[in-house]
Length: 431
Image (cartoon, rainbow, N blue to C red):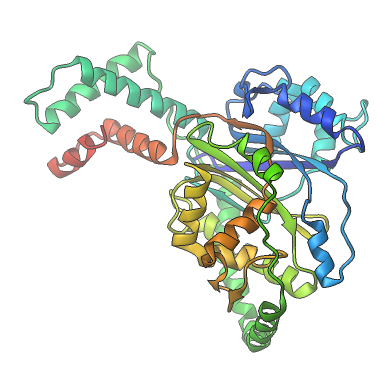
């Protein structure tokens, strides 16, 4: 199995050059916000391990909300963020990026205050990387190459079934015919089904240590945590009762800027950025909760579902600006309204435990109740913090998470040496 990794490079933009930078980023697109895989600046299509990538300008349009707390305003300097989700290691991805796109990346990062033309690009990217507090991957170990090969397999089998008269055949006859067809196609090198790579030993060890170590750590800390729990609940309720809700309707200008980049293909991107409520209580609460969520996404929710939601491909939560701000990015199937509705209806409590620590969030009740259930207020809150994503790359456009899971099941059936009649009956329904 090949594990997945990610990077996020963040650097402040030189004052007065943001508009010029956005024009340069727009030149990478084949339509607004959707990258041309073969664009000359960063030819994403040449990096075969890449799943998703994006360039987004981090602009905090809600910073003045902090005035209700009497807190000092954070800096108003906008930054450029470059995000990638890939197979293999982050180090290998950085090397691939430099190998295929060094000149283009240098041109893009030249708009950042800390970048000088003579700098080592690889080292500069590493120095400006922001590690995610929590990441989510729809299916651990499913590579971009696997997605492409299994989609090609499905299309070939669909075409074969259309051309081959199978009326009156039973499921076993169809299966045997398709297995023979695939064997011929592989022999002729018209189809490739690459076996899964060996799982890196270092990753397996780290994963096992994390799987066992985190529960052990919590067990060791449990006496302290239990003693603090009543105090925490009192503090939480005081904050919930006093924290203001700030969720006016997004401006027409902001809504239009977002709409330009949305719903152009079946899979979409989402970027949001905002301030964490002032004070150590909210900051530490959020850090602990994201630590717990990271454990579940790493060891539990890694086979197609994030809680009860199955439309997300990759997502991440990242602390920025000395943990005073939080950035969230996801890649999901369907439209934004469906995406938000899915979360509200299925895992509103999950939204609450994370995003209720952000300034202006709808009032929660004991952390998990209410909050996102106030649907209209929650949607206004989310849209106000959403950012237009200037460049977004999807290595498998038009292929949803559902399609990927179905295609893998089709491949599994083809590669089986034997199946029962019941298994064959279920497998045939995949077409």
